[in-house]
Image (tube, rainbow, N blue to C red):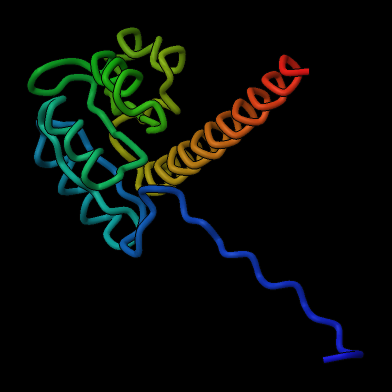
Length: 168
């Protein structure tokens, strides 16, 4: 209508992959039932936990749940945390990960941040720290996705500009 200012249409909030109406999808790579059930029950509602015992299961669950966070024990049925880091780098580069470790594993996991881990969570686990760390890792995964989309978009634009310049 003339004379009436139109308010800008609200922007639709885009949830990162892995954030569903069920909360954050997190895959926990562990062979210990007690740790998984503790976290699954404590984080119930806001963070959806999926349990994997092997790298293959973790890979599958990250794919089908669109998980954004991998939580891994230092060791699991078919490997160690650094093999999980390698799997993520190769097949799920947008997924952030955290390592759960005992104090005695401090030296073994000292390279985790250099291998892409968002952090190491020390046992015994504290609910608030675990919850905050998973949320932070989820946000990092979302930032990685946004950065990747922007990088691809600028590459397409840059490619078009360089092609135009070569045609002149």
